[in-house]
Each structure stands twice: as structure tokens, then as C-alpha cells.
Length: 407
Ligand SMILES: [Zn+2]
Image 1 (spheres, rainbow, N blue to C red):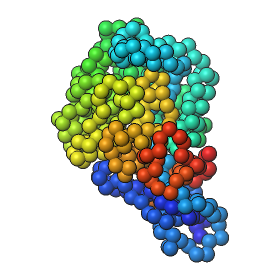
Image 2: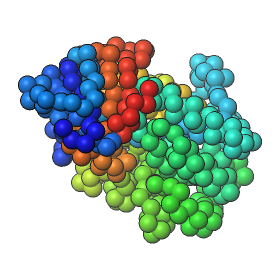
Image 3: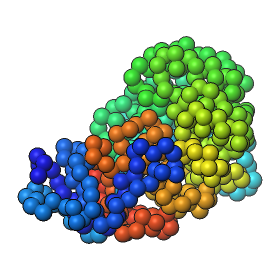
Image 4: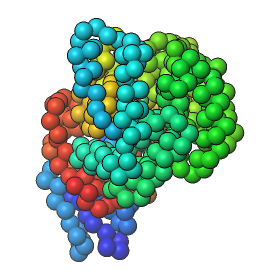
């Protein structure tokens, strides 16, 4: 027995994943009929039931033959906002496109208005509620972006709120500065001037309030050249970078992500073969957001199969946000990731665990092998294919963060 370690026994399937995986093809690993020992918040030991310690005097949890997976790592959300946009359902049904709604003052800009007016207390409460919902659905690490204020002082306020929630929420939070989410009303038609303002006034002040700096690189929003100079300035200040690219058109954002050595390029719905090859060479992880592509129904699903064939690391994110993917539950998207992206269950699991961690440059989670954080989920099934199959209901039974029962 190790210290006051806990033995989890009678595990039907233990998804350990392979932290040394080069890419999706060798990322999945599973032990049938397994045990797991957790000590001081980390995984101490794993193995087959027949190797289980026979004289165990510490605490024991009987897992009832259920599936255990690493806690899900949601590498892409925008959960810090006020207000909702349920009115856009009807607008889309009448044929309005994403960019048409944006240009009419709806979309991101309407959320910006409500978020600017919201108090610190309201925004903190809303984010805590959403993180609790994410946790109930199995996400133990959630990346959250700013980007619904779009002023220097307001974006700084959002980063401070993320940090304060990070210190109190049971969910582990990764903070990303996405002040370059959209061009604010005040800078309409002046995207380069807006970015120059951010680069001069905001980026140097962020310090350790953000783990990443991100930009919405898309034709009609921020161009490749504008994104290159903004993110180069961020890198010069020591920030790791990630980008929204090629969501609505192949604007060669993926090539820019590779050129910058970005940790991840996200969306990639329209990324072509040249972008895929560039990302594979640079080791940039693709974060695919099938919920958004499906919800907006604008045609393009990311070329996930081509990416995996090209040896890319592919994460699956929820893109939780009030417009194009109103959800906190990454696990609810697993059947759609499988179906819409033509992924095997093994590939989906890699995408929501180890590859999600890779997309956040975190090597201490997303796998259940000795030394990793004891963040894990007990599922109401004994078959890892089941959460990629049964949709629309929550299959999570229990969630542990750092070895502590979180729900
Ligand atoms: Zn996004």
C-alpha cells in the first residue's frame, strides 16, 4: 500500500490512452478488467484485475464493471459571456448566413454589448455555472477564451475574471486571450488599426493572466497578414499562440499556424491538403469543432480523415459559445464527432482526452498512466464505444479531479 492511496477496482474497461503517441493512430490504449490506484492526486498504478494488490488495507472504490476514461479535456470554448442568442435560430432558418448576421450587428457583436454591460459578479456566476455543467458532463479541463468585450480595458477585465474563477472552480481552467475575436463596432473597417491597438496597449500588460493568445483568422475578419503580425508580436512577449482558421473558407490560415509554430489551429473546416501537410510538418495540433459545423449547417465538415492519414494530432473541442455551439458538454458531441467526421471511437476518445491536452500544451493529463493527474470519469456503461453511439443523454456517473470526487 502506498501512503493513503485509494484502490479503484472492478473496472470494466480502463482507457489509459498512450501519452507517447506520435499522432491519432497510436493514441488509444485500453485495459479490460482493470484496477487503478490513485495517490496524492495522481495516478500511482494501473493494471489488469489479476495483478491487483491482494492485501489492500486502504480505501477501496468498487466501480461496478463500468468504463473509466481520463477526464475530458475541452481545448476550445468561449464560455465567458452574458446573454444568449436564441433569436438567431429563426434568422438562420430564414436563410441568413453567419457573416450576414454579424454584419447586421447580431452574432458576436450582440454578445459583446451584453458582456460589456455585465458586472464582474454576474460574469463570474455565469462562468462558474457553465464550468459546473461541463464537469457534470465529464470535462475536467476546459480552455476558456475572452473575446466578448473587444476593448483593451474590458479584455483585461475578462482575463482577470478567468484567473479568479480558475482559483476557485473544481474544473481546471486554461485561459486564452482572444481580444482579436472580431472587429468591434468602434473599429469597423479598420481591422489592422484595432490589432495595432491591442498589440500596443493590451498584450504587454497581460503577463501571466493568459496561457495563450488567439486570433480569428478568416477572410473578411482578420487576414493572414494581419494575424501574422499580431501573433508574432504576442510570441515576442513570450506567449504561446493558437488560431481560429479556415472555418468558412480555405484562407490559408492553417499554413500560417504552421509557419508560426502555433500549438493548435482550430476549426479547419475548409483546410485543404497544403494546409494539412504544413501542420503535420510543424507539429501543430488540429482542434476540430464538429458541433459548430453541424449547428451552423453551412456545409463544411473538417477533413478529419485526411488529417489523420497525414499523421496530424486531432483534438475534438466543444466550441461552447452563445452563437454557433451553445453547449458546455463536450461528451454530448462524441457521437457527432464519430458520425460527421467519420472517426473510429478510438479516434474520438483520443481527440477528447490526450489530443485535447496536446492542443493546450499540457502533458500532465489526458491519460491515466502513473504520474499523470488523477482526473477521470466513471461512465454508465462497460463499453467505450457506447458514449460514441448513444446521443443526447448524459452517460457520466462520477467525475474525479486530482483524485477527489467532484460530482
Ligand atoms: Zn472559437
